[in-house]
Image (cartoon, rainbow, N blue to C red):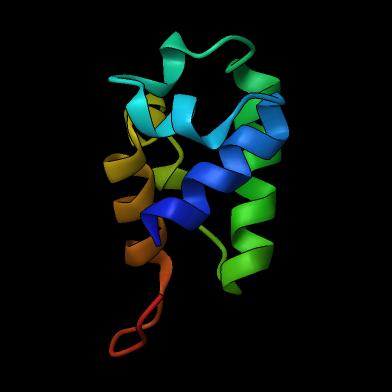
Length: 82
């Protein structure tokens, strides 16, 4: 799932997925701003068939691929596997 998230972020930002995978913080990537975050979130929600609750959409959830993966996993119904 992490690779798929990285590809989505890379596609939105127009950077290689390897750069996304290597980033300590997604906020260090060029163009990763509030508009990019919305685009990434919308694509990930569509790709994974979930809707992240608004209360969970905070900057800390977009810090790394790990935190972004946790955000998506938490949005899945219990028992479902992303």
